[in-house]
Length: 62
Image (tube, rainbow, N blue to C red):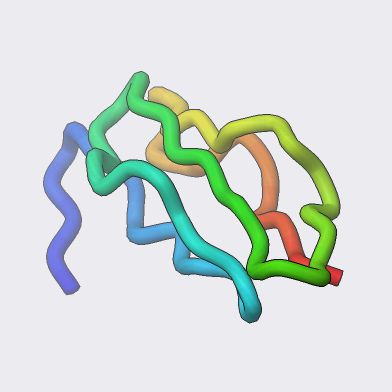
């Protein structure tokens, strides 16, 4: 995996879930949903910050 100076690493996809968005550049957002019968731990999208880290951890589908 290569990371350039303008992006974050792939945040992954929650087990029993789906990711919306494939752009991991700084300032971009990705959001998530869960399969039927599962609930997302938090609805807030992840934002790729200037420090190359996502704004918070990957949500879970419980």
